[in-house]
Length: 387
Image 1 (tube, rainbow, N blue to C red):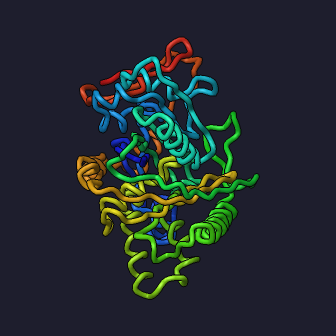
Image 2: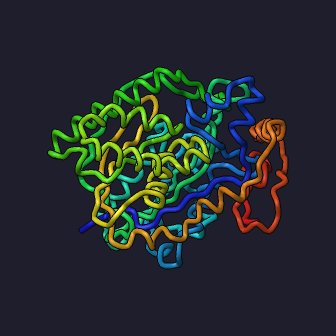
C-alpha cells in the first residue's frame, strides 16, 4: 500500500516588500539581494496574523467534509509557536472544525520539523490506511530591522493531507537522516527575533546534504540520472544552488542542464515569499510540481534541513493525477494580489506585533475576508476568529 501526500496547499499573508526597495533603503546594491541571496520579494506579517491563522488558512483551501471525517491526527510543525505549553495544533483543530476525538501535537526542530511530521503521518497511515493525517508547517522568519538576516525574512504555511493511495506523491521508504549539535541558528526563549551564524549555517547545510546524498546513493544504488528534480529547503533560493552544485559533476552535461532548470522551477515561489522555515522545502516542492517538467511515475528528491542541526533526504514518486490534485492552487494569483509596502510601512508593520500577553488589546484586521485572524489578547489568552 502506498502512503503519501494526497493534498498540498500554501498560504502567505497579503502584504509584501520588494527586495530592491529594501536594498536601497539599507544602502546596499540590489544585486546583493536579488542575485547574491536570490530573493525578489518577501511576505510581511501584519499583527492580525500568526502561525495559527496562516496554518488554518492554508488547510481550509483543501479540506473537504470527507477529509475532516477521516482525519485522525493533526501535526503542527513550527519554530514560531504562540505558546510554550499549548500547541498551535489545538487552536487549529477548533478553527478548522475537526473532530475533538483526534490527536493534536506541535513539533519543533528549526526548519526540519515539518519533515518529521510528514514521516510520522506516513507511518500512521501505513498502520491505519482508512485514516488521514493533516500536517501543517507554518512559520514567521523574523530577524530584526537593519540586521544581516533581514533580507531572509518571510512567512507562510504549508498544509498537507497524508493518506493511503495519495493523489500527488507517494513517500518512498528510503530516508537517510542525521543530526548534530551545531550553534548555527537559535532563538532564546525570551527573544522575539532569531540569532544566526549565516556562514556556519550555510556550511553545515551543504555538508549535511553532501553526506546524506552519498549515503543515500550508496544504500539505494541510485544516481542523479534517476531523479527528475530536487526540492531543497530554501531559506533563500541561492542555498539550493549551493547544495546542488556539489554533485552536478556526477551527471552528464544534458542532465546537468535539466536539473538546473528544474531547480529554477522549484525556486519560483520561494523567491517571491522569502523564508518560511518548516514549510520552505514543501513550497519548493509545490513550485517544482507546478512550474517544472514533471511527469507521473518520476522520482523527486527532497532535502530537508533544520539548523541546530538536523537533516533528512528522501524521495517521492509522482502519481498519475498529480496535476489535477494541485490545479486549484493559484499561488501566482495570491502572490500578485498582495499589497506592496514601502520600506517605512514595512517597518511600522514589523514594530506593530503584539507580544505582550499582559495587555488586553484588539488587532485591526480587515473584515469579510473569509480568513482566520488573530483578534488580540484577552485576559492573557490569544483570541481568534474567522473574518
